[in-house]
Length: 47
Image (cartoon, rainbow, N blue to C red):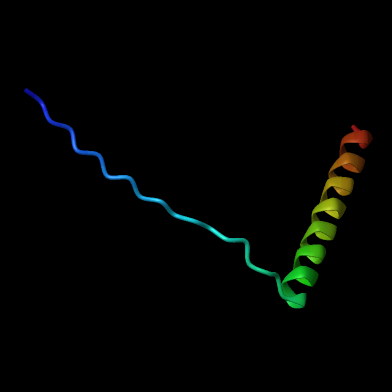
């Protein structure tokens, strides 16, 4: 006879509020990513 013991662990993750600095940094990162994509596309068009 086989016995299986299962333990259930519940983890709740709450979304924390972003600070203004974090929000601004995220915006800068997104802008840089868009600029990089634009550069890549322009390089592709050259070939």
